Length: 159
Image (cartoon, rainbow, N blue to C red):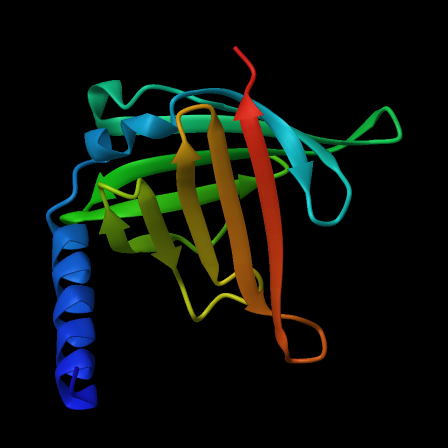
């Protein structure tokens, strides 16, 4: 296939996915609902619980455990604001001054990307459900050395 046609097709697919993000409802992210347990690429154990999207809001709570001790907790809210789906983190229970709008959504792949390039780290939250009993969350952004850093969380359904 002609390289120009491939590039045009790729741009069309990306535009379609981004346009779909604008039409996404919180209820479209209902696949996040449930209790999940897993670990991070940095060696911690995580438990996360995501509510159903009833009422147009998903609320989650998470805890990080290292060496048998809870070292941090996080709360999150996914909701609609000004016609956009927003991911609002509350690290250690404190509302972050930064929120992250949904920038791409793929219902078939069960993949949602929230992004805020003005934030330090992470700038991107990627939620994916590669299988019904699996959840993958990737945090991306600049590391301390300026190079792109990723932290990957791999979960399995706990209940």
